[in-house]
Image (cartoon, rainbow, N blue to C red):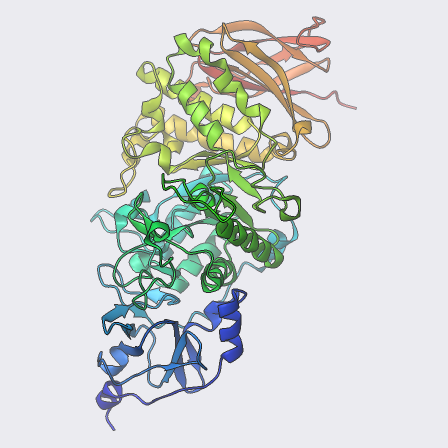
Length: 635
């Protein structure tokens, strides 16, 4: 028999296996369901398994049978909602879909929800891919990560979008492997500890930024193969950089080949259109009451940890998941409240399972409301995340910085209020993509004042952010003061680095990251009041604040900030120890685009102030900040 005829009419059979796995899947406790559903090597064939509970018939069709519609009928697994078939002669990268005949006789062609690889858009078929066999070189990284959590470690995150970070001269995108050189080298040079990637899961529309997913188990083929993406993560770890993925488990893409109405009915979504339809984003909501959806989504989080060695997940739109009425719908739970009880149960189960297997990972909630105990243990009534984006700090801080300095004196509370709740959760301070898109302007363009004052304001914002309790996140381009807001269709304006103040902003951010990592006072007690003390926070008239950050040994850094365009020479700051204080950071250094020619050292004076026995009289630059460190006497 010729190869051509084999490909037209491949041998196939049914294993008859999988009833126990099917039971776990339908129970909602199959947390590695990606090892069973989808396409996997099986004896002398490839076994395909798909969930289509209300389908009348399911056929497999693809390159291996010349896309014949009838030659590969699938069979139910022991009366479950799962269908299977084993096909010989399937080659890696063969494309395929499931042809589903609904109970109403309609025909649907669906991509595999569990596919590990997919065609590049606009094509929509799944690809068979053997996910095993990558030779990881990050054993040391993984052992160290799994031993300890990051609460008392430095975390400065560079949020990035592969499509628009950097392009080749002809406008084409870099591949995963090319990014493993280009991006990793750059992020390491800039001193960030982690890269957070906007969703890399397969999605049809670039303009969704990846948040409208069709292939939850497939890294997008825009940049290469799954093993190419493994290589990217491996190279990050080799260079001491962690990888966090954005993940959208609240809702999914409505495109015909995706999850919506998978077997002609709502499989992954509710059959109630009020609950299923997400008008805000034009998507469909996952139905967290279904155990199969629990198996699917928790398995997905496990899969990215297991096969791609990721170091954390940032869960998108958590507030939308938690509230039935978040988008304005008048929906209530069985108790008459607006909380989505099924989503709460899903979130707690998700965090429980992931941390049981990957205790050193980061599970980060994008939660924009005042929902209590997001990062507290589930046994105490919390949701079980270990980090939450501090949207309150971000909103208040940007509002304050956008205010003309002349009027900042009347908004001091926006600057200081965040400390009142800074330790109620484990926070990440985010200056994310959401703040530099959709007409919001870039961070630099938000800043008031002259050209030079805009840069001074931005350096001031960054230093305040890095001295404030909480882990740090900056969206790409912010590190060199991108002037226009982010555009997902084009690369960052890298040419700006040739302009003096942009180049010096890049130097400032690199130095700031390295300073942050080198000073335990800035991260060891991020989640405790023991790591922070106000010195002065009520000088509204001059818009000056100062505080201390403290490490576990009691060593302190003193930070002072001036949010007006007026220099404050010989300004008194209360200190607890006698002696000399060296300036270890100053936003006004000439290297950063300021005016300060040299770093100063200050001697304490016997002038009690701010509840402390001594004072140092320092020069705080206009629209600037300084950080002081006590010079310990030599023994």
